[in-house]
Length: 185
Image (cartoon, rainbow, N blue to C red):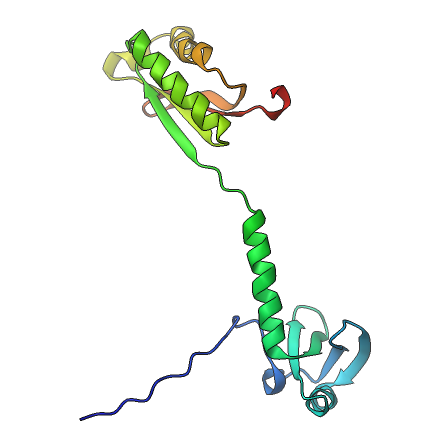
């Protein structure tokens, strides 16, 4: 019977964060826990100062010359970093691009249904890609006629929109991208 030891989980932020003896620069710029500048110090002296306060020496930025370190509790540093990352993630807005496909011969009832979906998606904040799907000889039809087919759908859309890209030729036919026009609300 083999007895295996449980591995310790490391709360490792990433390869860019070095602490205490992992900092190998000769000289560093030191900040205290409140963010006050303590000036330039030898790394050994900064480490001794941190140990005398029962805190850690954490490298905040290694891109600057000399490296910027902070005398702070490492657990508190990790907590603050996770909290900032969570705030940034909460502020980001993700938008989806929904696709609607119509053909030149699509009936009026289907166009109304598709326009209703487009209006709903635009009001939800998503972008909508409207494709006019062309097969065979239809790909070589006059561009004005094809754009008129796209306009049939756009006239039925109730949400205020703006065309951000298009109408452009695509491998499947013509396509354009719509998004909600916030100025016309």
